[in-house]
Amino acid sequence: MLSSVLLLSMPGGTEWIIIVIAVLVLFGGRKIPEFMRGIGRGIREFNDAKSNVKKEIEEGISEKDKTQVPS
Image 1 (cartoon, rainbow, N blue to C red):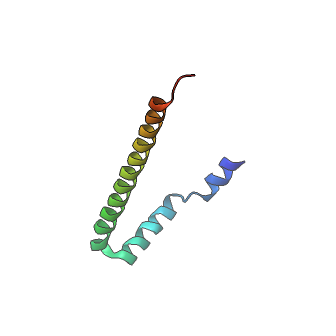
Image 2 (cartoon, rainbow, N blue to C red):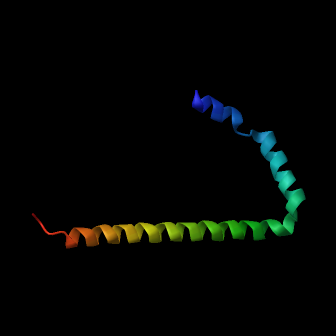
Image 3 (cartoon, rainbow, N blue to C red):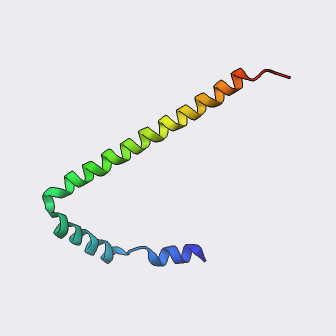
């Protein structure tokens, strides 16, 4: 049921072409590379932050395991 709803909401070939043309008209050919670079920087920063948080959590877990006294 859910997969059929998702398939119906996905744009098709003609709709993608219309979307691309609309983006070109709105942003112009010169602004699109700047826009994509900004998106790339944002994704890179997000991934860096995600890996830093993961590393801190793993370090906290390993420190907790080291400080626990066996019963």
